Amino acid sequence: LNISEVTVVGTRVLQGVHAIDNDQQGPFSSVKYSVLSGPHSDYFEFENELEGTLVLKKSLDYESLKQFDVGIRAQDHGDPPKNADTTLTVHVIDADDQNPKFLDDRYTAVVPEPPVKGALLIVSPREILSLDQDVGIGAPIYYT
Image (cartoon, rainbow, N blue to C red):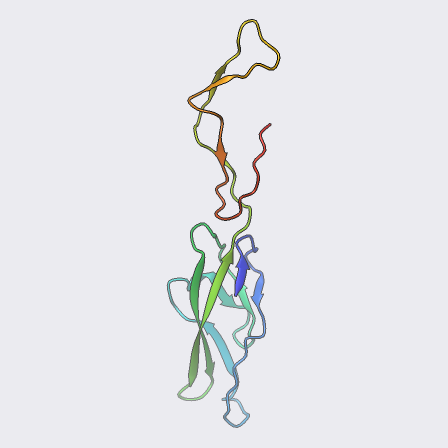
């Protein structure tokens, strides 16, 4: 499952999860769905346990977690209940959501006296440079 890191919490990210109980039709053959407890189970929940619609319930961040697995369970209403588990692999897609960062907190420059049109300024401690903090996006940075 590919999900952008800027997907809004509450978005339906997967619809149509479906398991079949081969028992005779009746009250025990309906299936309910759940997210299994695990290290990343807090990212998703089923909108309704009797329907297969998975909802994002926690913000994603590509820079801290690029891919992870979540366990999904389908369980009938038998006594005792029978279940089947599967693993959903989630790929977080990077978005341009990080601000650029300057290499230094402060830069200084001296304007020559008298000012000379077109003269280059000497900037300390180095030339002004910033980096895009988004991994893999490489969006251009413009200075004003």
